Length: 187
View 1 (cartoon, rainbow, N blue to C red):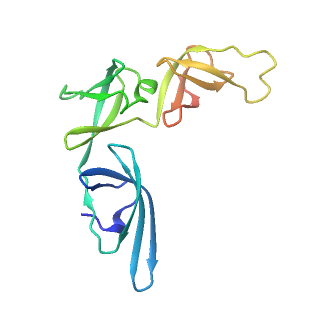
View 2 (cartoon, rainbow, N blue to C red):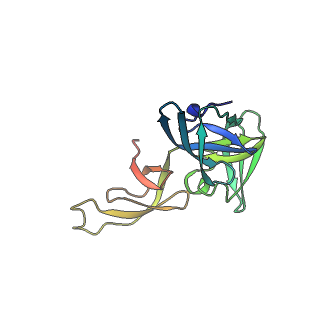
């Protein structure tokens, strides 16, 4: 059981049988009345965000959420398939629950799956991935004076904006949170 002051950002709790992660935390200290903790909680199953207020004596139930490193096998459009590389156990996740996985993760790459009550509730991507450029637009001569951006198609099929010096077959680091170019990978 947690006390309200234990609810720091990232803490996972259980409310009404559902797992929630603390996304915002604010504490107000009231003179002789103790303190009040205001938090915003994100439901790890539905994605809904709710505000909640706790007083100093409240007890909050901990959620037993576990992480497991798995290998991304493939996607058939409606589902994605993952495998634990040590036990060879396979997991199926609906495409809408992990919609960003096929955009940024190559088949065979490792990701984290989060489990609650034995069910997969979330696919946790690394914050950045290295992906090969399969097609990059050419830059018009004279357009290279400032930070010109051009489109580049990556091996997973997504198109991102990259600097003018990126060419086909370069490997680039992509931020999986917003799909932005971070840097060209050192070879």
